[in-house]
Length: 203
Image (cartoon, rainbow, N blue to C red):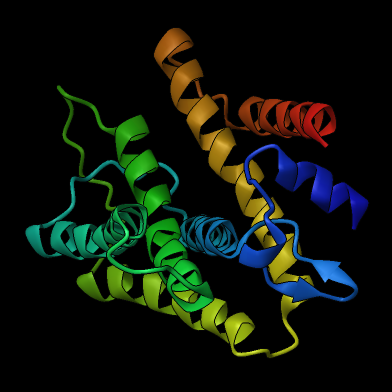
C-alpha cells in the first residue's frame, strides 16, 4: 500500500475527495488518473498480446475520429469544471480518464514507429472494432470500481503498472529519437526508477 502510494504521488495530487475508497484509505491515484493509467495498461497488454508493438500504419479516418471522441470528453470536463459551468464528479472523472487512457498507447506507438520514408504497413489497430473495444473495456472496468464492485485492489495495482508503462513509452520516444535504437526495456527500467525516486521526494 505504501509503495503504491509512493509511486502514485509522482504523477497525481492524490486528493482524498477525488479518489476511490480502498480499505481504510484511498486508492493510490485519484479517480481520473486511475482511469487513465488503467486504460494505458489494458491497451498496452492488448498490443503486446497481438504483437503490435512495432505497429506503424496510420489510423483510418474512422479510427482517428473514434480516438478524438475518446480525448474530447476529458478536455471538456476539465475546461467546464475550471470555468464553473459544472462540477465534475467521480463518475465523470473515471469515465473520461478511462477513455483517454485507452487511446494514448496507440498514439505513442504511431509516433515512435512511423517511418516518414517507409511503407508503414504494420497496423496498430487491425479493425475499427478494435479501436472501439479497448476504450469500451477500459470504461467498463473503471465504472465497475465507481459502482462499488470489489476491484479496488486490482485497479490500484494495474493503474500503477500503467503509470510506469506510460512514462516508459514517453522515455522510449525520447531515447529513440536520440539513439534510433529499440530501447523499450531500458525505458521501462528508467521510468520505474524515476517515478520511484520522485514519489519518494514528494511523499
